[in-house]
Structures are given as structure tokens and as C-alpha cells.
Length: 448
Image (tube, rainbow, N blue to C red; front, side, top):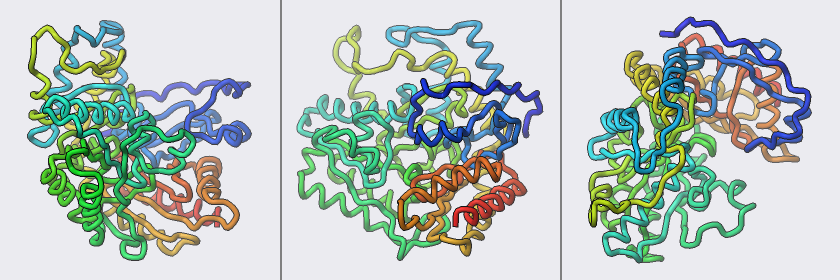
């Protein structure tokens, strides 16, 4: 399954870290004790000092096929030599049409059109703009309100930040977009603690949408956007029946339903998309991350025929949707994505994730008795481990765990406050799952 091509050579350590203002990073602390990477292969990163760090985070939820896949890098090189850039406005490349068709074939029936962008953030804002424009075209211009969810994450654009529900991502930026409201999150530790897969309790949280409809009026609401599994906030799987109930309410009131599958897409939950796992067809579905295995920036929105076709009217020489990006369907990103989809198909990685899910869940749940562990949640090849906050500072135990993992235990984790998130590449072996869990146990003890 894994290719054995040579590992890239390491790079020298920079002698000045001051110029780079790093994203979503505690910059001052990082630059005092950097976590610098120089290479990657299969299930491991390589540090600048030559240590192998097992990747329990798939990079940042995106390297589902592992690292250093020569099939992808060769496709990128070949494409860069043949066509490095083509303008996506009024021109096209064959690879973009091929890729859109293949993505649509993977998606649930009815999501047959793909609008490309460059990230999950752009995908969320694109979907929200399409929703608003669709209602305008349908003569329902009063539908301008957007509904997100508490603890949701939809990137860092103005739209995505507005419908997002993580307070620290919002509070610095003022009022953001007007006309936005939020559903409650779906987590209740008292009734859901240590759940494997979708918790039994919580479908009724979807009924809060009826309250928002009664408050604002259905005729004012354009769309609801949710993650089938809220990842960035610390892995909150949707309760059983929750997404189906949300679909029923949105259909009843003519509200569009958008699934943000930037994290859950491309095998993370054992299916091409979580919509398939849950048997729910949204009106739009956003993706990014795993589409290129993290090798090139790309995102997109899958759109139902009814929405797409509403735009295809008027004079044919007129632009139907005045939206897009300079690098939409970039040739190099398309090449990376096509090679990535080949790997997913040929190595049956989505099916592999589904097969490994119960073994992964059992292994992670063995951490239940470790110090300060308050809850563990698993779904697909993803887990969230809540640690008790230190009395003095919320998030400090999680930050200490990140450092202990990298510097002392040779493992890469994701942290969200005091929650540790495990989301390894789908190529992970059962032995490596055991190794990851063993290292996480050491980290938890180290920060006790």
C-alpha cells in the first residue's frame, strides 16, 4: 500500500523566526521553543533534527493517504511543466472538468455540480453566497438570514466566521455579518460521555431550528450550515437522528441545508462523504483538505441540480454567478486531486477507514482511566479526548500536551483548548494505532 520512494532531504534551521507571523499559533511561545518540520513520509513527519514524528493528525485533517506519495508529487511536477496556470474566468482546462465529474460521482446522487475554490474557508463563503443568490433568483429576496451552530467552524472568511460558533474565533472581529443566528451545539457530557460513534442522546437539539423559524420567520432564512461532525471544536459527532431531523425541518420551511464536509469528506468517517454515512442529502456540501491529500490548496462546493439550474437562465453570454477566485481549479491542484482520488480508489482507503473504526475506538477508549480525562468521543478514524483544565488557565494543559507530544514523545496531535484530537491518515495500521494510543497516554501523564 505504501510507496517506498526516497524521503526528501532535510532543510537547515532558519536563524531568524521573527518575520513570519504564523496563523492560529501562539507565536511568542512557538519562537522560544519551535516545532519545525523538514520532511514527511507515509505515517511520519521528520523534524529538522532528524526525529520521526508519528502523525496522529493527518497533518491538519487533510493527509488522508499519508505523506510523500510519489504518485501525487509526480502528477504535480508533470502538470507544472505542461501548464503552470490558466485563467479560470472564461477559460478552462480539461483536468478541471474531469475532476468535477469524478467528485460528483463520489457524492450522493443529486449533488451533481462542483464549484471550485482554494480552501475550506472559501468553500463555506461560496456556499453561503450561492444560497443568498439562489433565493434572489427565485423571487424570495427576503431570505437573507444565515444559521450556523454553536461550536461550529466554517473557516475564517467573514461569512464562515459569522456562522461559526467558536467564541475565540469571533470575539476579536466585532459584529461580523448581520442577520446571523446559531443553533445550540449537540454536546451534553452528562448524557453522552464516552460514546463510540454517534451518541444516542441529542436528536432533539435539531428542533431548536423550529424556534428560530418562529422567532425570525421562515421567509427570512436562507440557509443552515452545519458540520456532520464538528471537528475543530474537539470532535463532536452528530447524535443519532439529528441530521435527518434537521433535513426534515429545513425542507418543511424551504431553507437550504449546507453540510460543511471540509474535515469529514474523503474517507474520514468511512465514506466518501458523511452525507452518505447518515443517509441525508443536503442542498450543498463543502469540501477541501482531503481532496488533494494536502499537497496543494483546493476546496469546492457540491451543489444540487435544482440550485445550479436556477442560475442557468437569461442571455447565454452573461455570467450566471459573479463569484470565483484567481486560483479556482488551478492546474496543479487539479493534478494533485486526480492523483489523490486514484489512490483513494485503488487502495480502498474509505473502506479501510470503515473497517478500522471499531478497533480505533476501542484503542482510544482504553485511555478512559488516565489522569484528568473527562470524556472521549470517537467517530470514524477521529477521536476527541477532553482533559480537565488547569485551575489557573484554560487551554494550558492542552498546550503543554502539544509540546510534550512533539518534543518528548515523537507524536503530532491536534489540540482544541484542553481537548486532544486524534485523526490519523487512513493508511494507519493497527500496530500504529496502538503506538499512537501508547504515546498519547504518556503525554496525558506528563501534563497531569
